[in-house]
Image 1: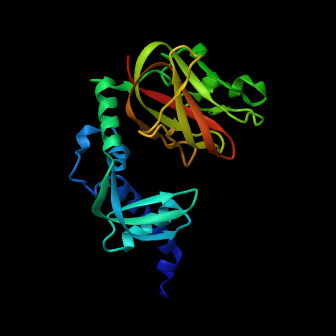
Image 2: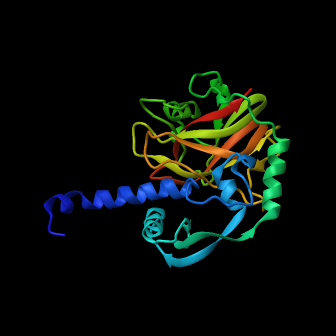
Image 3: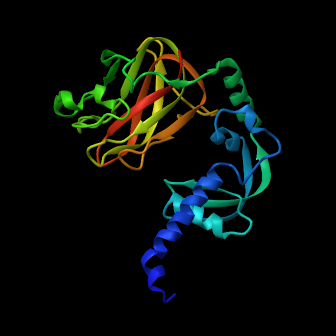
Length: 270
């Protein structure tokens, strides 16, 4: 296309369209399995994970966005799956070829046995209701107080604009001890305010006594990897597959951009 305007802005239009496809397709708006209802679950990911759709095309794509763009251009594509490890992109129509009854039963039982909040909200990282002494971590960059766990409060600004691990820490974590059993339904995360550092993926573990730890897992016992951030300041909310009743919640970052730095808030109710 010999158009100066398109040559200048065309790539941005293409990627914005792909991003829109991610939002629409991942939200589940384009696929509504008739065998279960979304009201049975606390997260869209659970809703889609109980069924398997027919694959109409499979190929390797460089990113989640490129897979979404491929689905957008395929007439019969209603849903897609992307494996970032293998870069395999599967485009599916809305035909259900299998229903995982065990997973369906698992999520229903988890929901019924884990009382949710009638009114949920922030539990106190940002506003200080959670005291400094309740926030601890596996390490701190150069043991500097201005990079300490208390810097992980949501919307912290200045130096340092987040908790930052020590680069020699091979299994970093940061945790909050709520000093009593609390219902937690999700997390809000941010990257580091003053530098381009953020956690892109993490797992969640929890404990009632700081001795025995449990992973938040799917129906097959596999620890769930939650999506983190893509920039320094945008807040990303991760909803847990079921309301969690626990005393201590630990974030275990598994991937990050440049450096392991994070700010966060807990969502739930006391």
